[in-house]
Length: 394
Image (tube, rainbow, N blue to C red; front, side):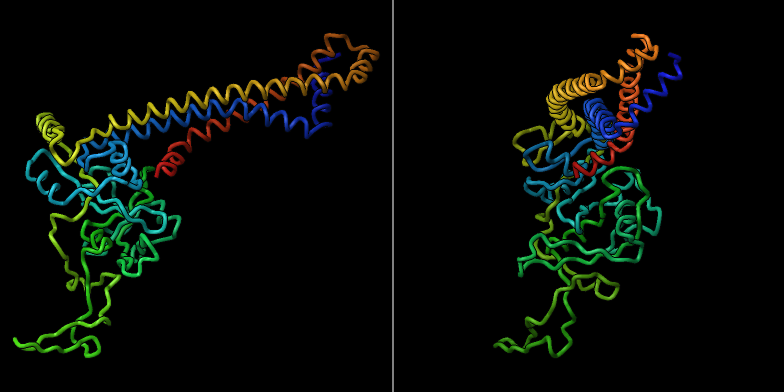
C-alpha cells in the first residue's frame, strides 16, 4: 500500500468519526496544556511581582502583615491594617532619609481603586498623562488607560466614589470627581486606578466639608443669647458632593491634620547610607511603624506561589496520566471495533505493516493536533499572564 493511500485512508477514518476525534484531541490538548500553563503563569506572575517590587525601594506603614502592606501599596488591594497617621509621614519627611511618597488606598469608584497620593508617585512609576493634564485642585483626578477605555471616559467627564456602606445614612456623601487626564498605558495596576491628591481622598473620608453660603434666609436661623446675636445653620444646609471652581474655597478640614490617615509611605532613599539609617530606625520594635523591603515581601509570597505550583502540578500530572490512559483505551477499543475493516485491507493486499502504519498515523495525527492546540494555548497564556495576574491580585 502506497504512503499516499495510507494518509488518505487515515484522514477518511478520522473524518468519519469527527466527535471521537475532536474529543480525543481536546482531552490530550488539555492534558498537555494545564501543567505547562500553570508553570508559565506562576513564572510570569513572579516576574511581574518582582519588577514592581524592585521599583519600590522601601515602604513605611503600620505594624502588621508585611505582605498585606506591600500588596496594598503596589496593587491597591484592601488592607486590614490600621491607618498610618499623617504625623508619621511628616516626621519621616523631616528625617531626610530620601523622597517620601504618601499612599492612601482605601476607597473605590465602582470596582476601580481610588488612590490618594502626590505627583511624585507618577515619576516613580514612570506614568505620563497621555490625554488632558494632571490634577490642579481639590476634586480632580487622573485615571488609568484601561479604566478610561472600558468606561469610555474622557477628560472633562466625572466619576463618583463608591460609599463604603450604602445603609449608613449618616455617612459621608460620595464625591463626584472631575477627570482632568488619562494616563498612558503601562500594563500595571495603575492602568485600572483613579488617582487623586491626599486632600481629595480625605474629603471622601469625611475629614473635610463644603457648605452652602449662609446668606439664604431658608438656611438660617437667628438665635440670640446674652452676649448678642449670632447665626446658626439649620438642617437644610447640605454637604457638597462635588468640588467646583465656585465652591472650592468653601471646603474646610476638621480636626488635627496629624491624625489624618494614610495607608503607607514609599521611601526612596538618597543613597545607601540613608537607606541603612531608615532600616535601623524603623527596624526598632519600639517604633509604632514598620519598614518593609517590598522585594523581600514579594519573595516570601513567591515561595507560597511555588508551593502551590508544586501541589497543582502534581495534581495535574496525575490527572494527565489518567486522561492519557483513557485516551489509550479509546484508541484500543476503536481498533478492536474496526477489526473487520483491517481484515478487509489485508484481503485486498495490504501488509500487516501497512495496517499498523494506518492505525499509527491516525494516533499520530490526533496527538500532533492536540500538541499544536496545547502549544497555542500556552503562548496565549504567556502573553496574557501579566494582565490576568494583575486583575486577580487587585
